[in-house]
Amino acid sequence: MSRRGYFLEESWYLDHAAGAAMTPGQDMLLRSHLEVSPQARAHADSMARIGGALLETVGDESPLAFDAADIFALDAARSQTVAATDDGAETDTASPARSADLPNCLPDVLCEFIDQAGIKLRWEFLGPGLKKAMLWRSEADERLWLLRARPGVAIPHHGHRGAELTLVLQGSFLDGEQRYVRGDVEEADTEVEHDIQIGDGEECICLALTVGKLRFDDPLLRALQVFTGL
Amino acid sequence: MAAGLRAEAMDGTALARLVERVAATQDRAAFGALFDHFAPRVRGFLIRRGLPQAQADELAQETLLAIWRRAGSYDVAKSAVSTWVYTIARNLHIDQYRKLVRAGRVDLTDPSLRPGEAPAADELYARGQDVSAVTEALATLPNDQRRVLELAFMEGLSHSEIALKIALPLGTVKSRIRLAMDKLKLGLGGLQ
Image (cartoon, rainbow over the protein chains, first blue to last red):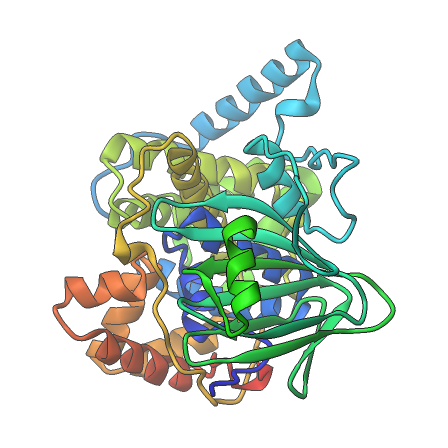
């Protein structure tokens, strides 16, 4: 058993702070987590200080091909373009449009991703009281998906053939004795067998990143996997 | 005034005052001093990230433009100016990468794109506001630890890419990074 707590492994925050390349699935899970967990965000921000300190040590190389006047000219040219088209939609200050079918608890960064990729959320049956909507899947069979679970529902004993990361966006769940709420990430790998109990009160909505299929102990649920695609 | 500023060595406080002047009055002389300090560093940083000269010049200009336009969003209580600038340049670079991914021009099956596993560190979580503490601590790191941080933060390599580059097992890279984070008091410990 490896219970790691409510955060991702250290290397995720460091890779984010350093701007390392990630797959869209990893990128979305991490940035969603940072948006809804102030503690995680503060941690990633504090790591970026290493970048600041190292930036100060970068030496002068060849002479620059531009100067400060070029920046003012660029600024003026951009302002004119915006004024001419009379449309603020192109600027990065525009907040992402939130379609009516997206749950309110979704982080802005995820709404933007859904919007840009042109994804229509299709909620499919996953089990009693459980629905899933696929967001993205890679050729390496890495999947980013949303889970909706009715309050009080139990997700039967299952393990994983690959790793699974689950970020709570709304409501809560219990895994054994650990309670996960908005902003928390549960990390499960092939070693972990878990029994999940969705918290009472509110519907639970999670963002999950899975590599490899879930492995249910119950043969009936294994049969169901054929239909649910998990 | 601007000439005087340019001659001085820039410490964190001086840089923060310059950004505040740009924010308050769109002070071009203050921006000129910031430009002289950061433009070569940002361009050098982008070149270390592997961008060709022309693209590095272009993104460096975008970074400087963002400094000019978004000076009002800089919060002296939250971060040092160099951290703020690093974050802007890093984000512009990673945004460009995301666009390439969306256009299908990056191989996502490349295993080096996966963050590896690292056991959670148990250091105390210290959050100072000043980059100088980190700078001083960086200077005291053994070369091998400093090197892995440079590969991560300057070249943008993930843990597994670093392992490939310096031909060491992934576990060694992780433990070096962990030791370094420990010394810099930036570990994850306080979160858990």
